[in-house]
Amino acid sequence: MPTDHLTYQLSYRFPIAVVRLTGELTATSTRPAHTALVETLMEEPTSVVVDLSGVTRADQAGLALFPAMGKLAREWPGARLLLCGLTPGVTAALPESGWVAVYDTLADALAAASTDPVPQRVHRFLEPTVAAPRVAREMATHAWWDWNLPGRPSSAQILASELVTNGVRHARTPLSFSMTLRDGRIRLSVQDLAAI
Image (cartoon, one colour):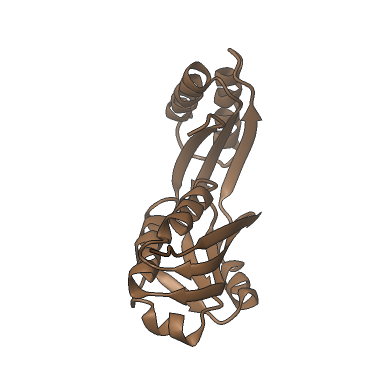
């Protein structure tokens, strides 16, 4: 039985991420698209643009991925999902949803995405050493005061330290630490380079 084939290419123009899909997007081929979108959301963009101009065939089951991922993107990290380059057949099969926006071209989608406010963010790669938690605490403290947040940065310091300590202790690989202020909410995240 032949299998549908779908590939993806990611590019980041922080704060906008672009995912280009090529091939057939069907119920049996959504895994690469799902993987690409999750990988992209981990970078906490303001918008994710999905270019479907390379999709030769799509069915409703495959396209159902986008409303679900659009909802997820809005919930975390607060990003919009924009689709572009849809053929008339793909457009007809796309389920209606308030979670995705559709644009004719990549240029149109990028122009729309560029209007989203850019969150304040600090980011740094850390080596897996005993000094990494201290560096993360210092970053959290400086960001707190630079962003004129009320109160004291104690909770952010503790969370930064704990997240980085876990990465150092368990992954033992270089870490990526980020602290983002978006819509009045602070997000701290740590990614390691351990094989999944």
